[in-house]
Amino acid sequence: MTKIIVDGMLGNVAKWLRLLGIDTYYERDLEDDKLIELASKYNAILITGDEELSFKAFRKNIKVILLKNKLTKKYMIKKVLSELNINKNNLEIGSRCIRCNNLLKPIDKNLISNKLPKKVIENNDEFWYCDKCDKIYWYGSHWRNIEKELNEILA
Image (cartoon, rainbow, N blue to C red; front, side, top):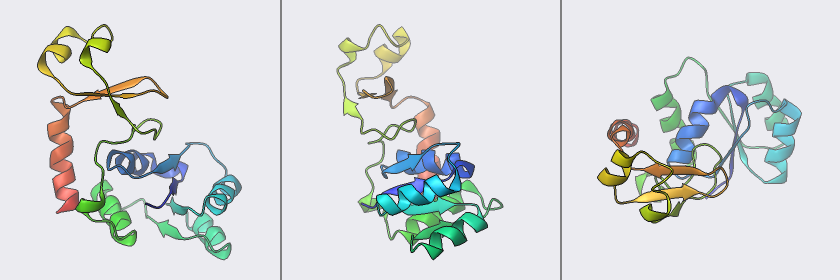
């Protein structure tokens, strides 16, 4: 799958792309020239809400997806998936850390029982761990809301 770079204006989009399992580079405070340099270096697609940055990148033969700030998050994600020609079957939902983009690894709950509330450990059997930023994931009650939004986005 293609590498994606998201500009600082679209952090929420970056988070959702990572949630969908799409390799997404995001840093909040990168200058335009650095974003263009990275996109060129990694042959990545640049996603931006900045028309000027979009034009600069286009002139350097970088594929750009321009998302206007007035669009809803759901529409923006749908637009990105459409532009990338990605459908539901191409996604690896929940495979990446939404904080740092690292691939998650399954982890035995006995190894993390001291890091989470007792109730979380008791009510869940599957956990995933990001060994880069030390974040733990599980299908908690918040996941129902995420699944609802995902179903609307992927419909």
